Image (cartoon, rainbow, N blue to C red; front, side, top):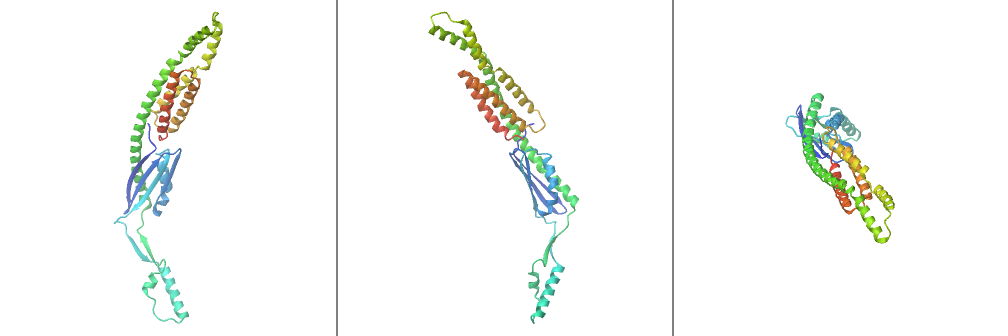
Length: 291
């Protein structure tokens, strides 16, 4: 299955009155790079989330955003930090005595001091929170995979169509390659006949033809090219991520194409080599987005 590396998914969860959302965004990357941003309450579960995401998404730069959302069910109330408040009262009383000050300690002065009042939230069961978070991540991953699969199918169709163009051009090269030495032999004979009045040395022509045929022989390149194409076709049936393998095969196909081009001594053959290179470059761009 061809799957894109780009995508987006969102999930929501709720545990003991705490509501949160999970967003997963992914773009192209050579390896799997997972980054998680979460509120303080959910930071202890960061490793679990990373493992859950990595088990599904193998490649890409993946950002996971976990956001705590407002909820009427969860109560956060201010409470007095008894120890800190008592310390301030003792300090103010000591200062009053030490400096012969009059008056009472005003309440607004006391509560204005740092950490005298603190916000306390209801406790959330850790197991419930972990389970709900896993469900929200799974929901986000489902949405992500749906988008990746849709983009991957569109990419597959485009690559298949371009590979058909490559195969058509390759067939023309194969047909033309066998004719080039024969045409060159006839041209060589005609050239020698124009330059010499005596009979043409057939042995010399045979030697020259053998050298030319060896220099422009692309039979090995054609065999390897066909083999790489078959391997490429087989990857479409794989259930595993195939982006890296496809990228490698495109490099090998380009290598064989360049060799055929360097050996080409024929305008028609060269034209088809250029056509193949153009299609391979477009396929290479598409492969960069495959997981």
